[in-house]
Image 1 (cartoon, one colour):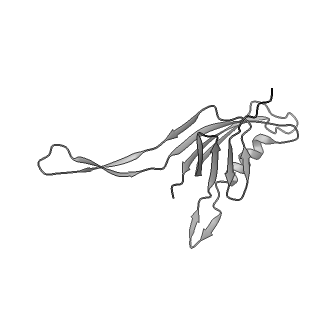
Image 2: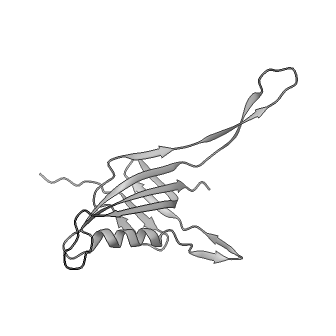
Image 3: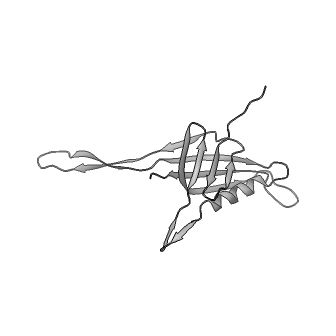
Length: 145
């Protein structure tokens, strides 16, 4: 039997592609909405009016493992850190780089990376302490244009 599992990925503006070795086991998607209270004379409570909505945010953890001939955990973390650096500069404004997040039919959107937290271990190469296993917590915010 041949299974073709869809793997999630992140694609940077410069074409850097990170294909997930393991898909996230959980994806947290959140969105906040702001409501303005309009005060009216003679009323005990104001009337709520839609103010604006925040973009969706995504949180998930990637499990990383070394593949033969590759330093996978470290190289993935370095690619992610590179995706947080401004790429378009000018007039004193550094624009955040866009990242295309693909998680199958669940999520396909452009985002910016808010934070990355990498953890290496528990297995390391005994000769040079290169990490063989690791994990990365990623938080992104959707770009609404």
